[in-house]
Length: 399
Image (tube, rainbow, N blue to C red; front, top):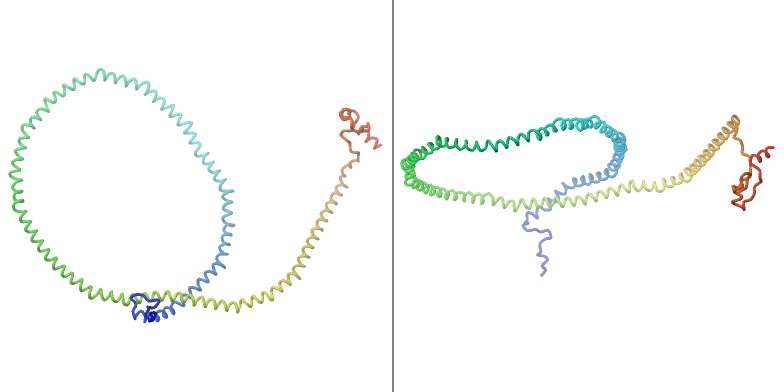
């Protein structure tokens, strides 16, 4: 027996019925028709946004950043470093010199010495030299004279006050007021407090318990009737309203909503495939109609023409320009040298040239001269020089 015929479909889900199977394909077709233009517009916008970002926004952003750095940041940094910082230091120094240092000097060199030597030092001296000895003397006088006399006077005054005021008041309180208060409290307890307490305990409490029992019975009856009515109302609502709505949601609305959501997902993916295929077709057409001819023209026409122009026109013109530049620089150099030579000759003709130095034999520092015999004595192997002075040699040559 082939058990594969009785298997469930691949996309079968529990709870699907015939309604789900019937509405799936039409809903997906309708949703695909609705979603396809939206997906194609979305893909076109995405491609346009990427192309705009790559071709326009990034170069524009780099240009704006460079322009901002060149026109704003660098001048601002230069202004801050070259102008504002020295100006701030100067203003800070000026503010310190005008506002801070005078007040500090006034506080340090005027107010503090004035307060210290004009107030604190005299007050401290007065306290230490005058008030402290006076206080010590007054304390000794109080301790030696006034304290013993004061203790005797206080004891006498206390005995007199006790005899005149305290003992009569204590006797009045103990022997008159306390007995009267006890009698009044006994009368109040037996005439006022005990009769209401007996009435509350023997009459009102049983009566309140009976009333409470009756009210509890009445409340229980009402609660039983109300609970029955509430249960009936709840059963009716559940049976007539909630159960049909639940079946409607579970059997109709949930499958329809699930299928619509799945149809949107499937239609979005299918629309993406279709949009990509359309985009590839448009790109293929654009390449074969525009890109390939332009590439062929560039490769077969423009490139050879450019190479010909580069090799036959641009390179000879460049070499000729280089040679002309070199010739012009050589001519300018020759002209400068000629002008400089003519200027020197004119200056020599007007002023006269420097005296030419006469040729002479190079002298050896170790050679012996007139009047200098120590070197020959120190260095015996030195070659002797003709014993004639350089002045005499010059005169002889001139003669």
